[in-house]
Structure formats: structure tokens, C-alpha cells
Image (cartoon, rainbow, N blue to C red; front, top):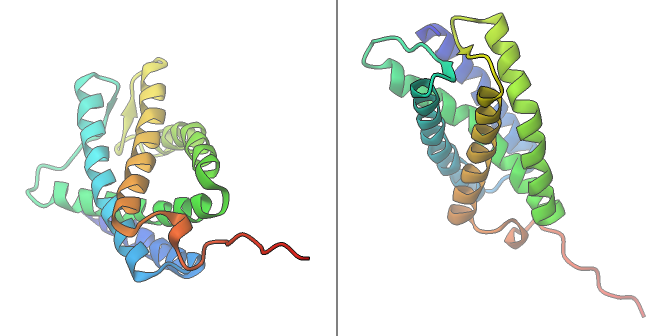
Length: 173
């Protein structure tokens, strides 16, 4: 992946982040929580890349320039941030069950997405054969979403405490 590609990806995900802010009607507190979640999950993502490369499950080539890794981390963090605004809405609407369904969907959709990207852009990522890389990719997706949501909740509070949360309806007489 080149520096220009990372910059373009970061810009595209910044637009997605702005759209998610608008559509989720996120407060500034929730926004800060989502950014903190993205920062924490970005570190987890970099750690997963390093671990799985060491285990030989996949390879993500990095440029040897001093600014490439921080730029990649920034792009990864920004690309993850909209996800936490969506998980917040799911948790607010459906509770822990909604979050569990979201995590399950991410585990199922994430690996095929990555394999399609790796097939189309083999210079970005190469997977080893076997089931282990698929399971590691799914576990990475679940870990990234769960950690980012947990950090967002720590920073911004639980979803049911928001002013936009549904309140029980008063019983009619």
C-alpha cells in the first residue's frame, strides 16, 4: 500500500465518519468516545497484524519510511470510528443483544471482505492457506469492534443513558 493510497483511504473514511455523525445524531461526548474507541482499536489492529504476520497467517507489506506506520495507524483509526457510532445506535435500540448480533455479523462478513480485497490488491495483503487465517481475521474483527465499543462506552457512558435513548412508555389508564 502506498502513502497516497493510505491518504485517499483516510479521506474517504473521514467522509464516512462525517456521514455517520450526521445520521446517528451523535453528541460531542459520543463523538469523543468513538474517536477514543477508534484509537484503541487501531492499536489492537496493528498488534493483530504484527502477531499474525509473525505466525505466518498473513502478510501486510509496510513501506520503510518513518511516517508510514503512523499514517497507517491514523487511517485505520479513522476507518474504525464510524463503526462505533453504529454500534452505539444498535446498543441503544436493541441492548446487548443488538451488540451481540453486530459482532456476529462482523465476524461473518469481515474475512470474506478481506479476502476479496487481498485478491484484488495482492500488494496490500496476502493470506496464507488454511482455516487459521480466516479464524484469526474473524477474531480480529470481533476484538476490534468489541474493544472500540467498550472504550467508547467508558468515555461517553452507556447508550441507554443518552438523551436520544428510548424511554419506557407510560401505561395508559
